[in-house]
Image 1 (tube, helix red, strand yellow):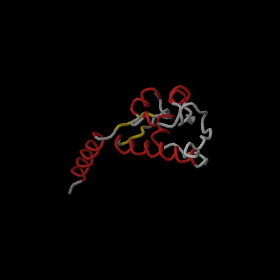
Image 2 (image 1 turned 45 degrees about the horizontal axis):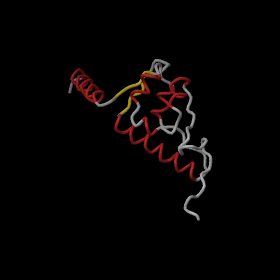
Image 3 (image 1 turned 90 degrees about the horizontal axis):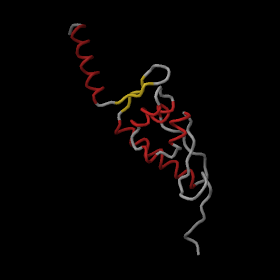
Image 4 (image 1 turned 135 degrees about the horizontal axis):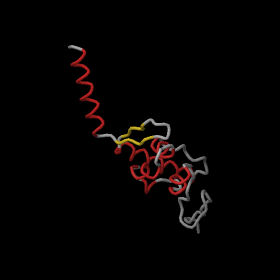
Length: 123
């Protein structure tokens, strides 16, 4: 197969892949490419792991790459709009968008961040 035919096939493959991917332009000029379905799973897992960490009184996990991409985006507001499962994000969304920092938010209504919750199962 000639190199021009191979390059043509490669270009078509890249276009097909990009049709199912989204991207976030980074402050350094690069692009973070992601599959929204896969990243939705990652954000959900991040939420679940954060809940478990709070329950076990352990350090919270590192945010997934998609959250770091939003943090480092050229336009954080537009990047946040592309974030799948943003309602499950265990971080303060306003601080993430406005300041570019990943600050944990409280996961229990009426409590401070990571404040212990009494065991309501005991009499």
